Image 1 (cartoon, rainbow, N blue to C red):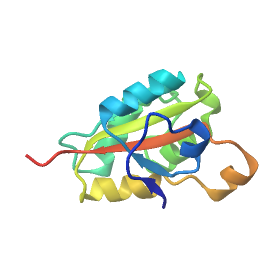
Image 2: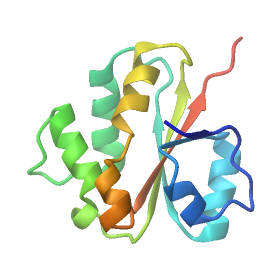
Image 3: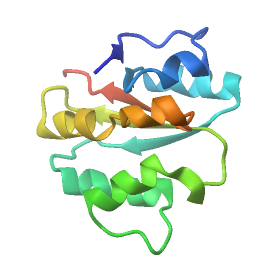
Length: 135
C-alpha cells in the first residue's frame, strides 16, 4: 500500500486518489480540505482499541444510511459506493490512532480501494490517518 509520508498543502486531489492511506496531521488535513473545498470528516480514535469501536464511531461521523448493516462488510460496501453520500468528494481522517495497534493494521487493510475502482471509476474518497503522539 502506498502511503504519503506527509501531506503537503500543494498536493492535488488526483495525486491523493492514487494513494490508499495518507498520513497527515489533523491541522494540515483541515487546511488542505478547506483550501480544496473538499468535505473532511474526522473520526476520533483516541482510546479506541478494537475495530468494532472504530466502526461505531464511523457510523456516527459518516452518518451511514439507516439500511446500513453494523459490520465491516457493510462499511466496506458503503465506502466503496458513495452513491448515498451527498458530496462529490470526501476525505475521512482517522485521528489519534495508536501507530502499532490492531486498529491501525485493520484500518490500513480496510482503507485499500479495489484496483478496479482506479481503472473504471474515479474514487470519491481519500482516507487519512493521524497517529497519536507518544506522551
